[in-house]
Image (cartoon, rainbow, N blue to C red; front, side, top):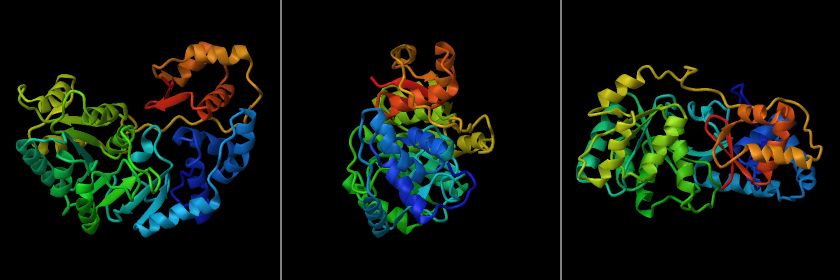
Length: 372
């Protein structure tokens, strides 16, 4: 992976796009393949043989298809930014499963190192929206960029309140599929005022229900902290707060009446240790020490060692031993290695095989689990 802060060439960007758009190639597999093969171009060349050995032929997008997606994004006013490039969001590169490529429109003057996420109920109360506007405006005036998901209610209120100072909307679909439709004018206002739209999804992708939690990890991952204004006990906002905790970021919550179901989630977070806030000063005071260089806040991803692929077909005992050590509960890779006695290099190859077959999934902290 590129870590030197230099930009990708046009050819490298197309190769990255083709690789990440290949079926069963997620961010973790993408990184393993590049670290093993040395480049996306080399990984693309090696992938057909790898998949053939696994008995799972896969279709790699053609160069023409990648060029077409780049052109479509360009017509929408967007651009692809690769992890490690100078304009890749500072905080996002430190989360597990950070997207190798993101599509960004606008945001050329955004300070990606001073960001706060604000999330909450779609059916927000008038008081909740007023509180959101007050917090967002004060955060913006203090130099923070507000990040949210462009949803109805709290998200929209946070974006509108920070059009003047800068805001980032993270999309669950492609850059050409703003959701909900009623917020298309708001998305245009965000761009017109120097803010940004951001997504990891392909151009043309219509958001599905399962894409919103995936988007939420980017909302929290882009931010030093996440503020929950109103949220039910079971809501996307609480998912975002949980993801923020997994990413070792700060979580704040506005208290509410126990009689209002929209306050249950925020009150629960406070009971569990989230910082109770009554104004932006509470957030600013906490984030003053949240320097992105702190290793306690931002830890680099686990990366496989740069050794040749070992695609010796696994023995039945070897794979059975690995599968027995895994479960639907995320487990640290080092613990799996200790439990099985399988060496690190071999373990990487076996996990890559399971990943390419779609049998495992990765989560924060370099944890691996079987797909349910």
